Amino acid sequence: MTPSTPTMTTTMRTFAARKHCDESVIHDPLTGLTHRAGIALGSGRVRLSSSDVASWPEIHPAAVQTDVPISVCWSPLVRCNLACPYCLDDKAVLELDRAERYRIANLIAESQVLGVDISGGEPLLLRDLPELIDVLVAGGCAVSVTTNGTHLARRAEALATRVDAVRISLDGPDARRHDQWRGAGSFDHAIAGIRAAIAQGIPTQIQAVLLRSTDQGSIRATVDLAATLGVSGVTFLQMLPIGEGAALADAEQLSDNEALALLAELSTTAAVPVRLRTRDAAGGFTVIRADGHLWRNQPDAHAISSLHPLRTASDLALTARDGSA
Image (cartoon, rainbow, N blue to C red; front, side, top):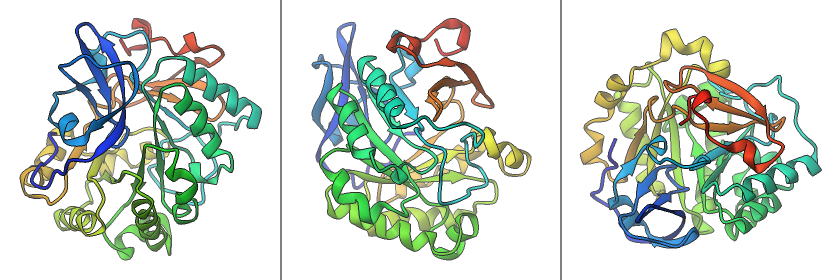
């Protein structure tokens, strides 16, 4: 889904680039999207105009024939202070210790992966999160953190000089609708976190999982809230029937066409950019879980497959046999 553009403002942000043939591929840590630049740029972290990048063609990462993924999701912990019923993580996974987390961070940094989204669990529960980000940034990665926002207000200052974007998960535009999924008080904490991140100058966006029970009024109100808060945009995520979310799939899962139709009006009328991450777009995506094992979404993102432990940077290589090439 193409982002809406009525209020697209020009700001300079950090992206990650990789030369590909006579052009460059760009990873946007705020949206998670991949763009074809149409111009040659240096490899690694680059400062670019956000409006320029948004105007470049969006491409599925699988369309870029590279040896390693364009971006990965790294979940260095399983622990979370909330219990979302559609969580993608595997709660049975054991967490690596501090030294092993740094080993994984260094391997990712060596691998030429452009983007790393640090997720969980709840990544802001990690005391060494800023230092892990430093390792990834030193390797040339663009780094985002996906969080439920409940600890963001107290950690935003430490993240501000390090992270390239934060993505805060909301399940509704107010406490009544959000807290029914995530627990009492979680909405107010998340909003405080969003305000703190914006005050610190961190590029910030809201993410919301799209469910069949999500009504049009809630969707519109969430986008209006984003505009009021001053975030850079909203991404609605198709629910993936992975992890605990598998139990909700029959009742709550929308087809990509249904989701696109639900958001069609917002693509031209919203006050902030609105995007949909379809299930198709999530196919082949690479996940590194808390135990250091590599996983990849199957091509249709209806399941995720375990591959192997991450022992060397070459273990991130894309192969035809795991469905990611």
